[in-house]
Length: 337
Image 1 (cartoon, helix red, strand yellow):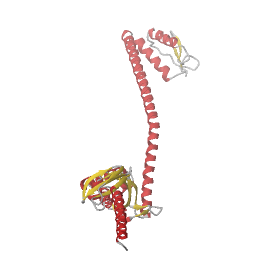
Image 2: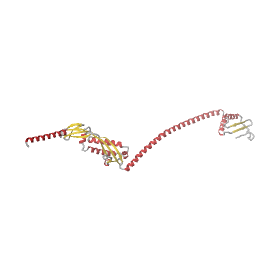
Image 3: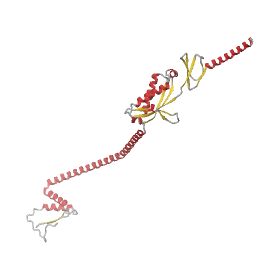
Image 4: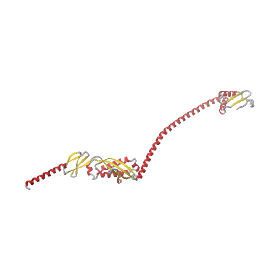
């Protein structure tokens, strides 16, 4: 090979190498970032910049770019659904309660990256650290509740407390992650027998609430009727009381009037009172009074006119007293009943 040919070959090789080098330099200095990502640029191992979505340039071989997914992501805790159906992971889900009972608790955590540089370089495994923090907080919170509360009424409080505790630890460790929600998906006893027992307890509580509602409904029906009856009885009692008072007042007035008449004419009043008493205790009795000077027949039957009887009594009382009482015979005057 002559010298000219050798020079042409070297020039060709040099041109190809320069072309390849230019391609490498161009390719290594251009990068793109999607809408869901954020790029962290480091220079000699030190973070120098962060870039959002778009086309960007960097210094080849000097600067390095790492992209971080900034979208919302989920984490399963206590179970796995990767096989198409949920499989419990007892090493995570089994926890002990305040009253020393075991319970299986499953959580689902929603999180996202807020500080890409912290997420990349403050922890070698930020997602693993999040899982460990979640496990610690979940066990601590569940252990402060009785098993009945964990299975029934305390689920909202538990997941809120777990979320707050996890976020506090993440801020303390500064790994650039934010937990937006922690959901307690399921809480159940670890064995089928215990599950059945707790279902029976839950049914009993529901039946208790039903019976209480029935009792309240019955009370709402009966109490107003009882109050109405009590009000009616009170009104009737008031009416009876007023009638008794009025009757007593009338009898008092009658007695006072009778007493006034008695003071003015004691004999006539005594006779009148005697006859009125006889009308009450011996109704329908005929009394015949026979004497030598006067014969009076007084019918004490209630059908007789009271004024006739009383006037006859007054007339008899006005006669002088009879000194000779005749004998009572069958054919003559006498007393008949």
